[in-house]
Length: 403
Image (cartoon, rainbow, N blue to C red; front, top):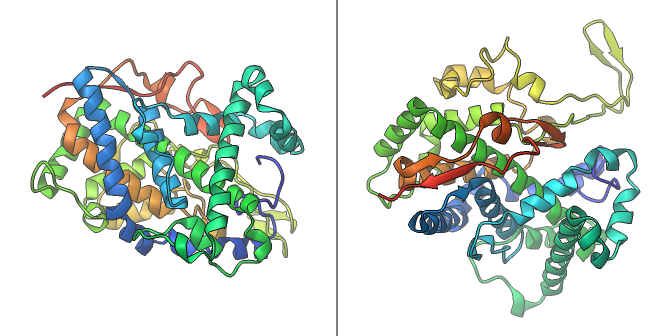
């Protein structure tokens, strides 16, 4: 989809090879692992994020929340992947540069799918040329250089007792190096490719879901009031923090998560799958073995027979979770399914729940939409593999009124 194949877990074609490459990732992104890291990583970053929002509130400046969520998401997944994250939340302004670089590259996805050799050509162009000739390619190339530098440092630390991690939070790349995958896949270049997969997916998907949820909650007062009431019941005081188990026991927040995934899928492209051994039978049609089959999840999520009034953001459609929610979950295709289901779905859910609960509890009644239109800034208008709003969009903007 984005250039050469078999370079990372994302573009590995052969099923057995994919299973080997996926092995080190699975325990690190398991529900148990995410629950352990939620108070160590997700909650502290959500608190830092809210502290930054408070700075904009004091300065009486509107916030481009798309950039803000992008910086938060990038910090989460980069700290999850490497011993040190990108530190976007330490900058003076929200900038969303990692997300902008990803979306710049994503815009080339259709071209690179047909002419994958262009990927290496683009990376071979000197930075001083792309900086002026193609700022989008320049952003992506700079990101690749930074990731390779981090990967080199991680590989150098391998086996050095003086460089062992001293925190309670291991990194994905160290876990990767200590796994039993072949040594040929433990080079800095390969680590960089795998890190990019994690950072790209972890930044784009969560940025989109947090952006969409924030808009729809603020644009619909009954939804906002119901969420605030649920938070009021769960929180003991203004500084309360909930662990992942407590967050997942909040039915309305969980329903908002499901409805956000339905109405604003991060991946809009068809995700092809191949059954290599036998023919598949679909109704009266026989699909020969080895035939790529795929569709976009948007066709399911917008199906009126499954989700009536599909254009309306309606968390209530998922309630009660134990009955109606379970029935509808089989139609939720935001993370794919099967052996190639998105490996980071538990992290995405935990980050979403932690951020929404922290942000709305701290600022909820002071938040106000600013110069934001659903059709222009929120709805999917372009398919760059990653879903994107109108080219006229400046992102979701929110003004934080003083208390």
